[in-house]
Image (cartoon, rainbow, N blue to C red; front, top):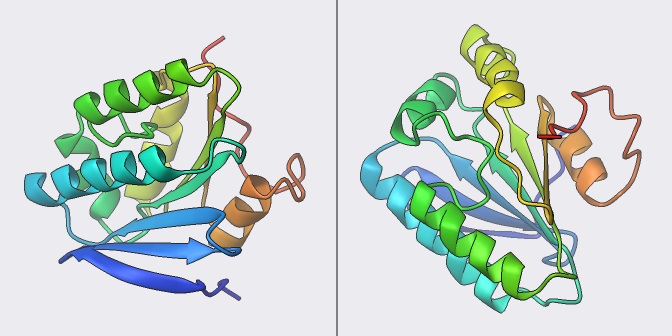
Amino acid sequence: MVPLPDSSEVLAKGLVREWFHDRRVVLYKLTVATPEIIAVWAEAVQDCLRTWPRTSPYLAIHDLSQPGISLQYAALVNFDMMNIGVTLEGRMACDDLFDAEPLWSARVAVQFNLSLSGQTNRTLMSYLNRDHPSIKYKTFYHRGKALRWLMNLDATETGESQTVNSD
């Protein structure tokens, strides 16, 4: 059973933001990938981070599970899919926010589907990831498992991939 959001909003045609667990987890679901939508997403993440309480970790899901969307998205972001800020400029802006608050942290779950493109992109993440020390990423095929990892429930026993690190 797919967990239902507390609320949702359309940010652009093809991009929805959903909130879970009393706004402690934000999910961005991409269903259409264009440069304009990617730019809206990057700005929405930065706006969200600017107002996120610094006493709580930023917990997000980037849902790329719509069939075919992960490859389109990958091409638009130069295969930098484990990126809290979505675009290169967004990553740099987000890194600056976390650099200014060294005790603040984030976890970002990237959700793919079980199609060949989803599996390929998930595999690529272990090779292309660039980590910020305060931001952890993990890939998932199932939203429920992503939410459990974000909320620190079953953090090591989700049946999904191991945390992608750039040690």
